Length: 318
Ligand SMILES: Cc1cc2nc3c(=O)[nH]c(=O)nc-3n(C[C@H](O)[C@H](O)[C@H](O)COP(=O)(O)O)c2cc1C
Ligand SMILES: Nc1ncnc2c1ncn2[C@@H]1O[C@H](COP(=O)(O)OP(=O)(O)O)[C@@H](O)[C@H]1O
Image 1 (tube, helix red, strand yellow):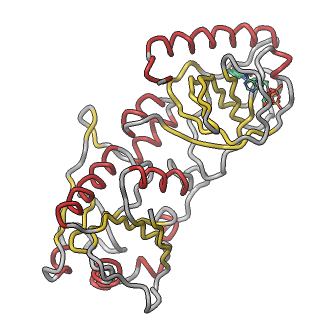
Image 2: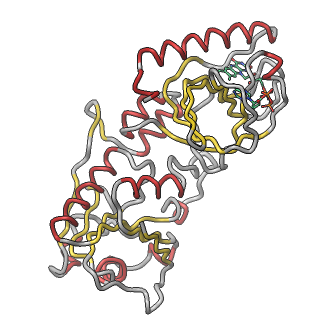
Image 3: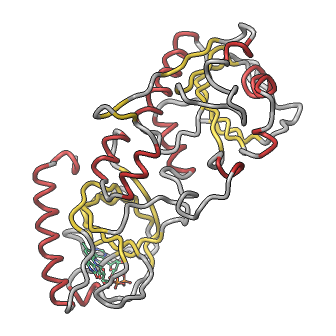
């Protein structure tokens, strides 16, 4: 998969002559709705013998039009994961565009000329609520007007789950509610994050449950504080594990939030290893225990819960 990084205004030499079908969107999460848009574009590209391309952006468009809180600034899928998912879906080329004030303030016709016609798109595909500029006119309904018949416009209807629209906002809310199962249903795969194993306070080993402390990028959206069943992978290994997102409140009231993972049936030094974490199921909230022994006893119960979960969902270890 080729990745072409674009900055508006585009340099004169940047253009395309081979036919492309262009899927447009920010695609945070690459959820079931996004997958529908991408599959429609892929199918159209196959029909027309065109390259399957995606136009997407380097950050939330909201960065341009409002002050965002640290919480809002985060993403479901950071760059590497989004590109991995695009590649997995068969995308040939990604136009990865810097979303700036200048980009947003092109007129609708300028956007169409600069980012659709210039790359020789014969069809463009996006969701029903996609916008391609700063005004209310930059919607899918108006896109045929700016095309002058030079490309086909395909609008994907909303995909729903349990009668409600699938959206990145709904997935973020599910993660804020610790509902990693719902997030997984909306994504069509478990919610995934990754981070590096760093040193912690070296208390885990004394409890009988060593925990790999995983440092995530600041911009990664994480499930809320709680205890979860996860699957971790690194290199060619994959293991079932239990994760705690929390402040280790049993030990102090002022510890920072950490992600700590005890891998079942595992005993190796993995400091420095980058772990991919698939969040499978919520177990319980974080509890402040009176003694470390009570925490150890609860960890044993969490382990039983985790093993039962895997027995009921054998597909997670296939
Ligand atoms: C499955 C699991 C559940 C946990 N539950 C709690 C909890 O309820 N309360 C708490 O204070 N810490 C909890 N922890 C975090 C432990 O306090 C933490 O892993 C331990 O202090 C080791 O920290 P260290 O890795 O910095 O040495 C949990 C950790 C795991 C892996
Ligand atoms: N089953 C296991 N799960 C997680 N980490 C393990 C396991 N077995 C060994 N380790 C190693 O032990 C480290 C965690 O031990 P711990 O005493 O909790 O120290 P720290 O506070 O530095 O995380 C991990 O980073 C990893 O290198």
